[in-house]
Length: 285
Image 1: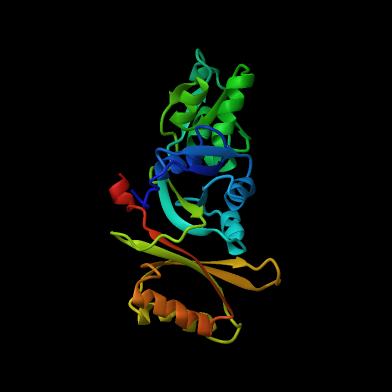
Image 2: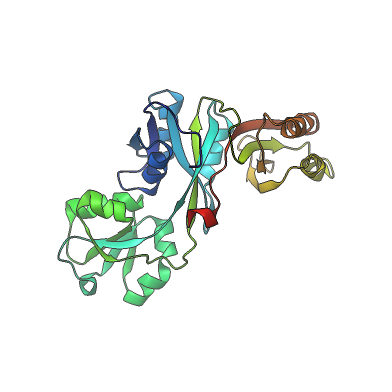
């Protein structure tokens, strides 16, 4: 698995309701633990900060839609660390109440990203797309409120959770649809067996060549950078934070040395965590 699993049952906070892809990621992290749903990312995050849950599992990146910025924003000022990552393959399905035929469906409900990722299917069947707060939540509301001509786009787990039938499977436009999750906690896992990643955020001093000068520390220390993304600073207009993922663990001398050099060069550096890397997409498939 992608992370060093806890030896005792844990409580993992996630955003959504039962059947959500976030719940799946949480349970893959802690199969013997309890996944606890929350209405928002911030509520799930705060549950871990307040130690109501031992961890939080939040999406950080989708292979089609890109980064989930709210998770990064929450991490920047937090006492929590990234202690693991999970990668979940996303398959969307058309769900409806038992007895519904696909020919009867006129309106389909789901999260805006799910609707966008199933545009070809929606256009083909001339459905009216209606945005809901999340995929599993749309399935839950459909099971509770029903109504003729209605369906939801969600996971098969959501269909099982709410007694819905799967009218069509794997309706996403592109097959390679994955979501990456960060597992957040207050612990600092030591380096284990297998590949690791380290995540950090930095700000430069806004001098010519500063960003390049900082990034050159990675190849100079033999480190591969796997992600670089900028985000506006909320406290300084037109200034940016740079979120970075690299291969390796902070306990490894070359990684620790690179981070020390960054701290001397950058205006701000925050270590977000070192953690076992999730399997590659080829390994997942």
